[in-house]
Amino acid sequence: MAYEVTATRKRPRSFEELTGQEFVVETLKKSLKSGQLAQAFLFSGSRGVGKTSMARILAKSLNCEKGPTAEPCGVCSQCQEIARGASLDVIEIDGASNTSVNDVREIKDEVLFAPSNSKYKVYIIDEVHMLSNSAFNALLKTIEEPPPYVVFIFATTELHKVPATIKSRCQQYHFRLIDVEVIKSKLLEAAGEQKLQVDEEALYWIAKESTGSMRDAYTLFDQIAAFSDGVISLEKIREKLGLVGLDQMNQIVDALALGQAREAVLACDEILASGVSVEQFIMDLAEYFRSLLFFLHNIDRESLLGFHPDRFSAATRTGFSPAQVEKALELLLALYRTVRYSLNQRYELELLMSRLARLKEYSSNSELVTRLEALKASLASGWTAEGSSVPPDDEKKKY
Image 1 (tube, rainbow, N blue to C red):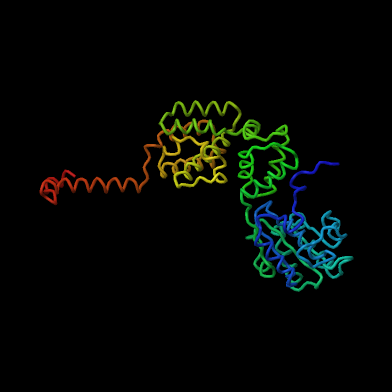
Image 2 (cartoon, rainbow, N blue to C red):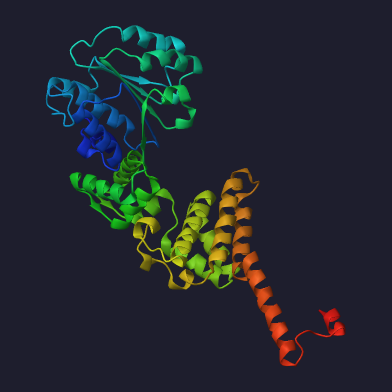
């Protein structure tokens, strides 16, 4: 049997399997149960959060032999054909490849014909924002007053590019980014199915790197599983993908907290010599300071940090003020934006490490104002203690 990637194998096939989009699921299920269905839907959201999967599930719900139903059987001929992508009445169109008005005219001609062996003819147009303005205009009348047996489902990652005239004719559903904990649980389930030994921290790292996309998480999981030899651990991930380990980062930031620029630059040199790119190092260091900022605000959720809080150095967790950590993050993010245009990326990074070693000397404007106010109050109290609430004119001139 041919190998099937995890993202395809684990694609949701029913409303219950679609995790992280409870609002969309409940709304559509209630619409199906009540029979109050729109004839055009617009699904928007980031990549890999379930838009196309939801469109296929909705198509099955409409054309199931028991349907329209909120619980398609998945075993009838209609459900099986839609699952295989072989249904003649569920037409999936790539909006990026069919952008012209002529492509839309073909759809307008096709909708005049009733479905061949289903209750509904369903058009799923992915990346609909890629259609041209003339193509959108050609669609307007069709989606506003389609035949009763036609349903349009549009999916887009860039809702702002869809004209308001199209939005006003559709029921809109926004798909949220999937929570890290939910992604981690699905990855653990996939690892169990493949009989892989997994490290909790490795799963948290994969879930965090996917930035809310289930498909991205599965794709990264497959890549890591390919070189893991049956055991997925954070150390293997960092070794193979060229990432900076947390212990190394603790060592560097400890040196920065003590103002030891030499030790920090030498540790940085050792990491770069191991094959870690300058951009990756900057990203990892920025992520570390982000975690320090969370600690200073009493946030220690492992799903946000990516590691157990005890893995971070105790000295660095209290070694900087919030303003100093914010300044470090500002410098790191600015360097990441500009380093790709640098004549020498390494020089830029070493310059930043030298500046971060003096981070303890940094004070924000509000802190400086507070110190000046305290100094002013101290001087005023000194004059009061000597019996005069206001210094003499000749003493005023000194200050």
